[in-house]
Length: 412
Ligand code: RAT
Ligand code: ZN
Image (cartoon, rainbow, N blue to C red; front, side, top):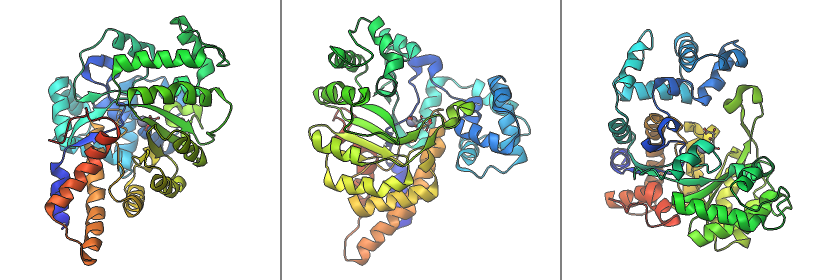
């Protein structure tokens, strides 16, 4: 049975529903190659555990000096058994490169020789994916300028309209909107919600996003009187409804627990999911894609998904994307929700990471699905290849397609 499941998992191309990758048209915003892989913030966090280097000294180095240091400390002086370090080894192996090369020069040479577009094709093939969803921030000036030029978009890259700056840091960003001619106020009075909605409408036209998304702190409360809730209910949710797209809520991040290590300095915390309960109940005509960062929130999320069909749990996000936790969370979801959830997204920031992240997902899921089908067979159910194919397609494509919009390619 496990061979059959491995076969099906390998044959079905997945859709990667949340990444930080960019289509080639976005130029330098899209990260790829060995120096980027080695300086991934998951690895930077590990560097500071194994090396005494001060974060400021590290941050003053060039990217290739940083990569050299991480290679030396995490891959030469120590054994790369953590999920993030092992991932680099897996990528090198998949691309036919030797991870025991004494220095990085050959590996760098390999990447220098790649042309981006065919390289993306190869990476996607190795990862077993055919589409990824980007994270697109209309308040990132560099990115916004590229969108305004109206880049021809590689159809393998879908957009997601990210709202963190607007919803979580309104006081720091409202002026950006007012400079663009929107009649908004710091306190969110007057025309603010109407104008934010107009802003979002414009960006929906421009980006044609698959969904809007926001990450939320562990202390997020709803209902509540802060600007975030006003903008959420009076601008974001009506705009999502009108454009027929879901809102993705990524709950439980504690930003900058240690600011000194920058991007590596975010943590996680348990959320009060009653906020989610309120949103699902009060906005039955909106759909919510939800990922929670705290392991302790996972069971409650499944319970809520049984209560609200406008809630779609997705992914084992960030600190949860480790085999032991993916196994636990996914088993719980299958037991409580059958195949009506989206098991994983890669969260890749660097192109080649999709290779190891999706390989790991398939490796963890194969025995898990085998166990579920075995129990069903023992209890008298019939499990055929066609059943498994249908389920795997649902999990890794169909549930996203039907929860977002039919325009994501139909299963091939
Ligand atoms: O996983 C990550 O790389 C995080 O830094 C975040 O980007 C997180 O996934 C997010 O989307 O906020
Ligand atoms: Zn992310």
